[in-house]
Image (cartoon, rainbow, N blue to C red):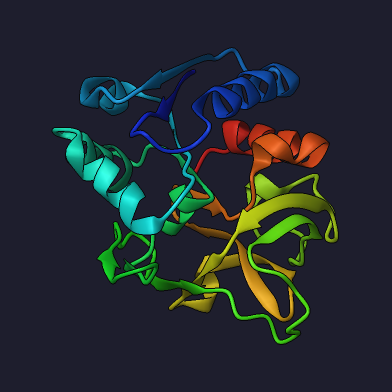
Length: 214
């Protein structure tokens, strides 16, 4: 299996690549993990991973600045059906639009808006940083097989996605109200939290993604 972690100037690429390499070994999947911004490599990949850190607009600009990258992603994921995993802002970029600092168009692969977190409890700090339990229905998605509701994962974010279609929302976390934690549609899945920082739960999720046959 050829796994490409997409390099567009955002996200902890080394940590993501190491996590997917380790996840492949743990899952018994023979895989090669590369970090690349080469559209040709992206088109040939068996699995694609889009990490992301920072502001939505900056991450979108990073994608657009690399010649042919956004187009290669569109063809690979939307037309060819290559399984795709978005992490943190990499997940948020799947939305229709983001509202961090200014309105910015997303990839619009999963309809929704990325808006500022507004916890109902004013004592809760922004950014939302730390471990939170996942709320989801067992059996809702093959990638979540083997993970129990309530499993804790690691978040660092100030903005969150609100999906247009409830069916695209796979899991939430509670931070002064429900916050989108995992989204998915067809061959696409994304997590607001960082699986590479989420210890055994993150590794289980990565393994589920690598075994997944959408």
